Amino acid sequence: MAEDKRVRQPDWFLTEKHSRDADDPRIERIWQFARNINEHLDLNDKEKYEAEFFADRLLDKLESALIFYQFIKNDSFDTKNISEKRTIYESLYSNLWGFYKGRVQNFLKETGWNLAIFFCKEEDFEKESIKFLTKNPGREDLVEFAKKQRDAWQTDFANSRNTTEHSGDFRACINTYETKGDAQRLFAQVCWTAESLLATCGSYKLAKEWNVIEINSKSNIFMDEPRYIIEHAYETAQREKDGSSK
Image (cartoon, rainbow, N blue to C red; front, top):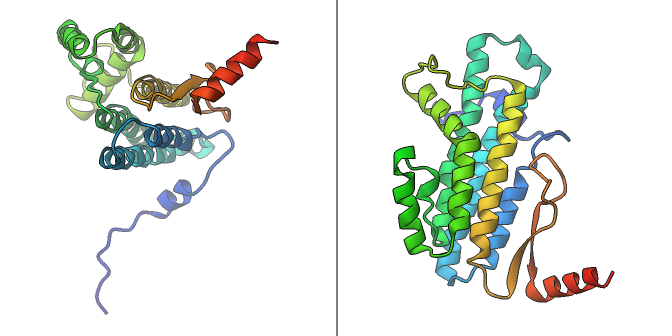
């Protein structure tokens, strides 16, 4: 009998991938939001097909990130040695960064956006901002948003990722993010920023009769209530009219 040479995932991988706890991040909501945006984009069928493909790739990375997040939050994680813990943290952050820097940007490129201002070197930020505004006049809001995200968390997180993948030298006060609180916070932060970009950039590429509406600004990936919805302009006008009449 021929040997089965297919690579098999370990039992723990299969078990964790198909389990969901009530306190897990609702990763499907970002994927569904991107698909919903794509459905109403002002693009032709071929362009929509390509964008839909990259929308589906968002879930791949989030599924992988969830697996490692589930390990970290589990009580049994505390019994693992330092090397095992570090490997799991690194795997979580690698998938989150790949989702944010790679998969989200790939989807947005299909809708006509180049967001190099979010990921360029610090010394190139002003130059990239000018290039971005030349191509997208009046979009100072995105430049400001990029600056805020870079200053608040993204630059530190990117430095941590680069150090992990290359030198391993954390002596220069570079964060390692190796606590359960860090894992939850960064999962929420990465997804919040990604969702913000999908909403902001997506809203400018929708067919004119559709709107992206933020219905709960305090919602994050760990909450059931969605942060954004997409609705027809008539529904938006009617809702605003009903609200103003109360």
